Every structure is written in C-alpha cells, then in structure tokens.
Length: 102
Length: 477
Image (cartoon, rainbow over all chains, first blue to last red; front, side, top):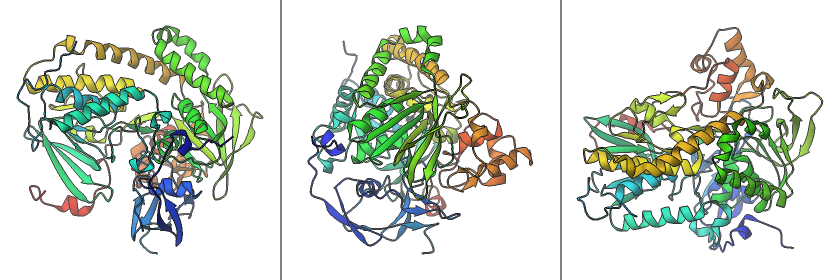
C-alpha cells in the first residue's frame, strides 16, 4: 500500500520545485510553500537559538503570533518562517540570538 | 427568498473611500463583507494572508497544485459559496481585497475610521485605508499552558500543526501526540492521521461525561453532536488511542522532542501520582483552547467583556462606526463567526443609510448565534485545563518563551515582591515583554499570579518599524 502523505491526500500536482539554501545546504522547495513548510519537508525542525540560553527553537504557533520561528532571509534577521513564502535563490540562515551580531 | 438589493442602490462609499473596511478575511470578515456589499456598500477587505479564508479555510498555495483540497477541510461547500461570492463582488467592483496587509492600528479621526497597515511579507511599507465603518474580524489564536519541555522543537500548537498541514502540506513529524483540551484536538488528530502521521495518542484533559450537566444544550445541537461523532469515527478509523481525563505533563528530548509523559487525572482534575507513562513521539500538537485577538479594538477604546470585545445585538462595539464579529467577540468556531459576520454586515449597510436594520432581516443568523454561544459556553465549561496546572509548572520551566523567563522568576515576583497581576509581573520579570508581547505567556503568568487572564492593552497589534511611526501625520501615504 502506498503510504499516506499530505500531498497524496489532496492529490497534489505541484509545479516544479526550485532551490534555496539553508545554512549553505541546498534544499528543494515547492512553489507557494512558506520557509517553515520547506524546512519541515526536509526534516529540519529548528532554525533559531535563543539569545539567553541558546535553546533551539522552530515553529510553535504556525500562524505568525508567537515569533518563535524567526530566522534570517537574504541577510534580514527576524523573519517569521511560518509567514514568509520561499522564493527561488533565497539564502536562509539559522538565527543566533537577536540575529544582529553574526 | 433573497433580500439582496444588488445594483439597486447607490453605493455607500467609493473605491478610494469605502463605506466599510473589514479587517480579517476569515469566516466572520468574509460574511460581513459579502452581506454589506450585497446591500450596496463599497467594501475594502484588509487581510494579512495572501489569500482569503482565514485560519479555518486556509488552503494550500496555488503552486502546490492540490486538486482535492477539501480532504483537509470541513464545511467546504460553505467555503465555495464564500469564495464565489467574494469573486463576484470583486469582479463587480464592490469589494476591494487587500491581501498581505498587516493591520497594526485603527484609529477614529473626526468620525472617519483610519486603518493603518503594513504591506507584507516584509511589513515595512505602510498603507492607510479610510472608511466610514469598520468591522473587526481579527479572529483568535491558541492558548498553550506551559509544562516542562514545551519549548522543544517538535512541540507545536494544535492549530499550528493544522495550519502547516492545510497551507504547506507538511507534517511536524512521523509520530505525533495530540494533547490539551478543547474541540480543536479531534479534527487536528484526524487531520494529521489522514495525512500520514501516526497519531500515537489523543490526550484530552476534560471529562466528556461532564457534558451530561449540559445535556439540554447538547440536545439542542444535534449538528454539533453529529460533528463530534464524525470525528470520533475518524479517530477509530485511524486507530488513534483516545485518553480522556489525561494530560501530557512533560515533553522529553535534548535538541528536539523524543517522547512525552502522559498522566491520568483524578476526579478533581489533578494528576494521579504513579499513573504516568511515556509515549515516544517526534511531535506534539498541544492546545488549551483559544483567545481572541482584541488589540485593534482596545486601541480604538472599545469596551471588552472579559477577554472578548463587547458587542450589542447588531455586533456593534460601543465605539461609533466600529463593529466586531467572530472569535474576537468570543471563541465559538466558524459557523458562529459566519452568523456574526453576516449580522455585522447587514447592520453596517443599514446604519450607513441612517436606519436601523429590520430585526427580521437577521433573525436567522441571530438564532444561530444564540444557539452556538450557548453551546460554546458549555464547551468552555467542560474543556478546562487540569486543576492545579499552575502549581505543577516546574521552577525551571520557561513561562515566557520570548524573554526566557522561568516559572521561578514569576513565582518570586508574586510571592516575594507582591505582584498580583500580569502587568506587574511583566515589569518585574520581563515576562510578556518580548516579540509576541505576552500573547503566549499571558494565561500562564495569570495562572501563576492567581489572577484572571486580562487583555494586555498593546498600543499596536504587531511590531511596527520606527520609520513608519516617525512619519508625520498626513505625510504620504
């Protein structure tokens, strides 16, 4: 039996993927996915360390309210991965602390 | 019978200066926009998302080519009606839909409502919309109470897991536990399982038998009971183990979630010692109910009733020209939001004509509203977090995720420094001072301080660049 997946559930026929880099690693993204969705789909669950204890964080609320999923996109820190849609060629980086001194 | 007067009246408002600005394009906002536009009101619909639908009708982006998006949804026919209605009004020029517009403030200036937004996703470019009336349909967000390990990657809100699935077609992991309390948990568990996750357990702290106290209310809502039965069938089909009167008391892992501890609750709702067992999982979708977004209403000076925006029979707030509908006036789901939005839209159309709406024109949605408010009051009564949850938060457990404030600091502020409310705790500990402005930690801080959750009186609904604030009034745009 073919395993269930979200894509199969909605009978998705996505447009061709494009690439972005996440911490210098190339990852394929389906058009329309947020950065958070793109990272989840390759098994990356955290992309920020807190500025106090350096804890790893990723998506929490998923709808732009909690600001836990912040990362750096094309040099701009503090972007909410759950809201920002990935664009071809995006350079995405883990955000350390405030993201202003890396 | 239709009471639409489409095309028969002069529009109230123009594209430049709409009669009505609706903030939020979820069920409440869409219903309000459609009802008002159908009665000749020029409407501008302002929404933060790239597409209409709100959280409830969040759909995969077009590029994902979902040919069967309804597999992730309930009440899809209703969505099709809303979607087609919106498209028709946009086509006819009666509704302008501003997507990716993040509203941070609405103010009243000599009788005109001025809506300030930032254009997304960067949220730096300011946009201003002026209107004679505003409907606030800003929805709600999920409440999560802290427990050890709740900041681990892999722990997400139940609604967040659902949003990521509906919008991005992705799962938080292979093996999920869904936990907390409230009506959202069942659809989230069934949705994750249908999409291929193994849902190891659904852990609900409420005791469904408590609904017996509300038997009359349940009997009055056979549709809601049927909906529950439908989800129950889904849980059985996917062989999801349901543990009622249980709670997840700890999440384990180092850099990401590896397991959770589940415990039974006794008849008082307290954790039964020795009942704990461990469930391996790589994701936990957790939620303890929802809270309304009320920032815009608060800045406008609208009266609140507890945490909800207070409205009258016509969904009017006590500020002239300002209506509110949907979750922002009290959590109650999509059907209630649709009814409230429709009433608000009808009322706006009449009031902009300087007349009162005929009560008969909104008798049906008013009836729906009365019933569902009663139903969700019962749900609220039954779906409560475990008793003594605040005492159980470990001293080193973070309460404020943004500012990394542990429970010990909040306890010290309360017990030793005499803080008795959320605001004082914030000033003493920084809990609530970070990026989310206390939206996540507010209920926990209130629980630890032993006071009710209160609205936070935030001047702006979202972070605003200083350059936008520094701009002189009247300066473009």
